[in-house]
Image 1 (cartoon, rainbow, N blue to C red):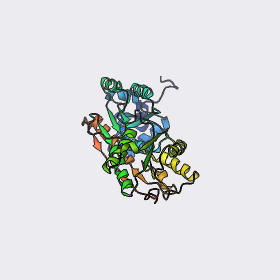
Image 2: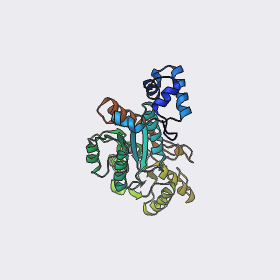
Image 3: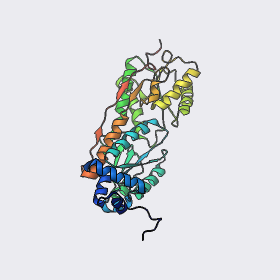
Image 4: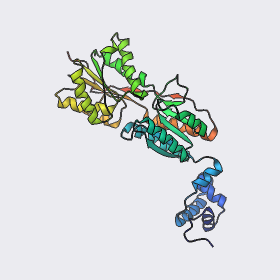
Length: 340
């Protein structure tokens, strides 16, 4: 006799709905192949019994959990949230689930999270940027867990990635800044150490300066922790160090919003006295005063294409190929010509 405390089984659902266990399984895993009448009967039995599929047993049978892990640097950045939402939505269309962890930009923590997600059965991992503890990749190879990098693209890196060229994206924006006549540039950036996205954006600024005959040594750079308040503090500190810059370039919109706030508090009229530029094109950039000039990053497209790349590799064995996505410029009101 079955214990009253025992969890309902696939057989219980089959008996209550009057179909075979195979039909129940098809209804749960591929509902499009069963008739609507059968699907309604089975799902009614599932709800009545409180049945939940045994994913552990399924994983043993298929050698796959249909779960993908993602490790992002921080959950405080809306940029990652938008990309991950699209990533999860696309995974869902292929019946894959998502597990998320945040490394807080800490190298050792990312190592621990990689091991933890693999231990919990992640079939593959989505990682942000190329810079990390080198021990991670041999570990993943030994566990036969593939990984894909996003939020950056480097044609010379052998690790597959779906993302954009941070260096090129920033240099495109700075060319527009320089075409307006700006020659005294300054920059606020998140910490550069172990962050190839921030490093690429800084190098993009320097590339454009060289192209226009300026010395990169003349660029004043202020590093700060990610956050609006940190961007505001960094702006005040930068203005004390820099020689009257006419434009402040920020490595993210969040830092730029903080800079805009502090500029207003200090009496600057943006963009008449000073221009401020961001990077990311999060929704916040469209409600600032003035509207924030920024680089539009294809957040959702990165999420969608990353999901498709990983699922195709896991399900069909397709090789993972790097994919470069394009950024575009949003030349809004916070950027104007330098003051005369």
